[in-house]
Length: 115
Image (tube, rainbow, N blue to C red; front, side, top):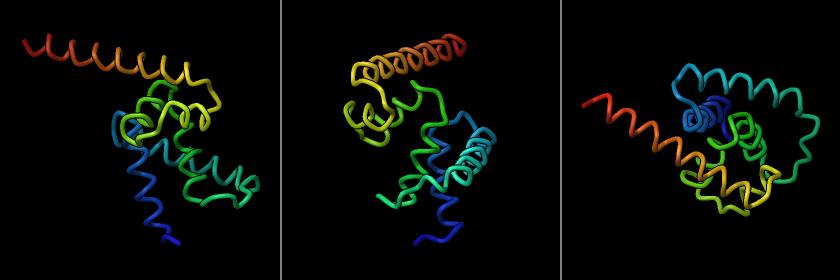
């Protein structure tokens, strides 16, 4: 089993993928662990505790950001994302499309601002 500081570092890295800055990631980590402690009685021991905690943290950010990160950075398929989040595969695909559109807009706006 991982040390507490090792688990915290791993989960902080995960939170950084889903947040705009370190402060937001720290807030997500803290809120996520509060949720973990509140729901620890529901952990059935099926799979790893780390995986269960990851799911709680991942499910805390906005939908399209979650889908984007799971698909792009975590290499999940749309079926796996749908199963994990309790949504349809088509919803996962549309959320990914929405995230890409948002990212495209942000990059276009930044490029325009730099000109």
